Image (tube, rainbow, N blue to C red; front, side):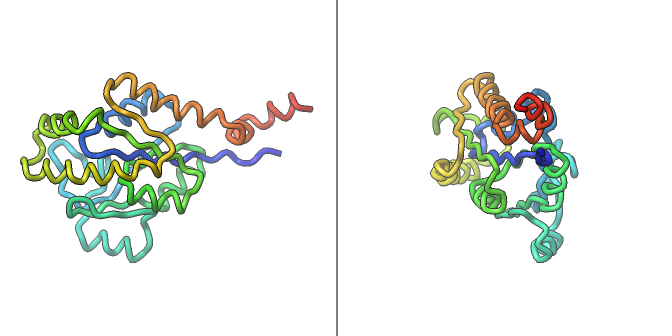
Length: 207
């Protein structure tokens, strides 16, 4: 008898400017049945960001209400703004058999690993601190003061990478994307996943 197939929770973290979002966006069309979790945040929307697509933008009061109602799987404060992941949405999506990607920091990753021990944690590094600074400056999103603060935060973020299952170095984008895709493919070929998905075929062969 096979168990019901459920999705896998993938937690991807990286310092700002390492290319995490670009890699995830490029991965989604290549790997079927994967959904990107949309976080709630109190951060103001940047140019081009759409509510409900990039984030759910809420005010401080609404965010605090959701915290009090224990609506978040994890939440954290980054650069003075709050970010949180909907507990109900993630649970429902995984139960439907879809994999879920969370793009969150190490604090959130730690909280999610406790709640979902089977989750897969991936950390993305830049090739060097110098390259990271160049990428942050090239985005033209932050002032020099904010960039220096992000670089400082990056060192702290990267110091927690040993808590993750996989580490990628985003030097060559195409190579890093291939490595990220390989993690998803390999995880779907694990024995318990294959028996959940193809149990009837495997059991018939094993008879």
